[in-house]
Image (tube, rainbow, N blue to C red):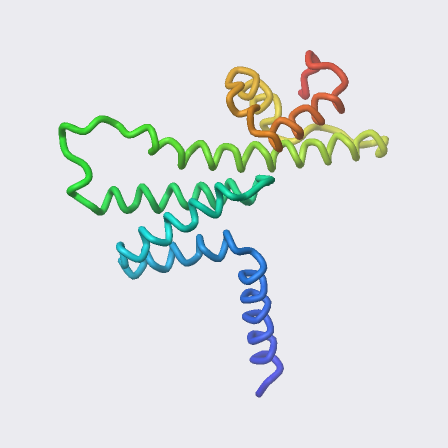
Length: 173
């Protein structure tokens, strides 16, 4: 066995160990494979199981919202592929928007986390210039759409960033 083959096996092993550690992500990867193989019945059972696991999560960090986004994506995928579920008499299902909302939450949490890190570092580094992209837009959007701030981890990072800016009226540009 060559060293390069051994390295490839080591990488595969690390991927497997990561999946074993992260149960939610493992289930999302399974949904992807079930969707690829078009195993709809098994996929629906797995969707329900993953949904229950997400609800049981006490603290929801950004990664949970990424998995939730993927879960909503696969739920919508099932609806798209099942012609019996949608007819011309149906109204738009509000649950379709959960996919986008989960992705937004994931994006906002990670953006605020980076902004908090950046602002914290900027206080110690004298020659730091500029600010992370889109931060003014994110702050404005979160102010206008306060339902996002009901998510505890998002609200914490939002408030930390505001605290590091020192006043809410200071613009990041």
